Length: 142
Image 1 (spheres, rainbow, N blue to C red):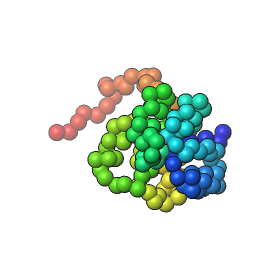
Image 2 (image 1 turned 60 degrees about the vertical axis):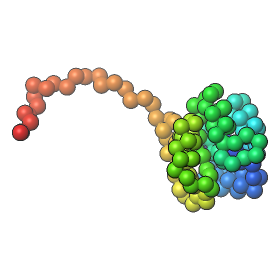
Image 3 (image 1 turned 90 degrees about the vertical axis):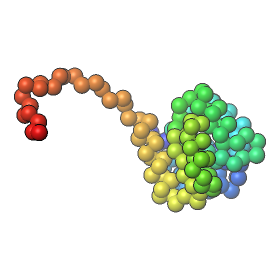
Image 4 (image 1 turned 120 degrees about the horizontal axis):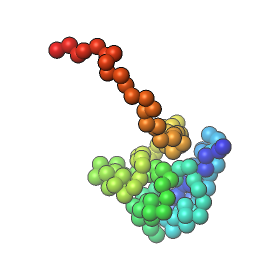
C-alpha cells in the first residue's frame, strides 16, 4: 500500500516541490497551505506521515502540531529553516516526532519519512513466551 503524506506549508512553491519530489519516490501526497487547512485535513483523513513547516502566518507549526496530536498519533516531521536547539526541543515537546533543518537533501528527507513509516507499521514487541532457564548458564567470572 502506498504511504499517504500530508505536507503543510504556507508557501505554495514548497508544497508543490515537495509533492513532486515525494511522488517520484512512490508516496501519495496531499498538501495544505495553511495551518487551519492542515489541521482539518489531518482530522478528516488518515496519513502515514505529516510534514509540517513551523513559520506560518495563520496558525504556527507549534499550534498545528498540538492540535493534530490531540486527535491522532500520525508521525509528524517538522521542517524549519531555523536551527535553534531550544526551538527544536520545544517542537519535539509539542508532539513532533522528528525535526529537520531546511534545506534538506531529498535523500535525507525520504530516509526520515521511510523510517517514520517503518516505526508506525512495526507491531508491538510480543512478551517472551518462554522463561530462560538460568540453571544451564555459566557463572559470571569476577
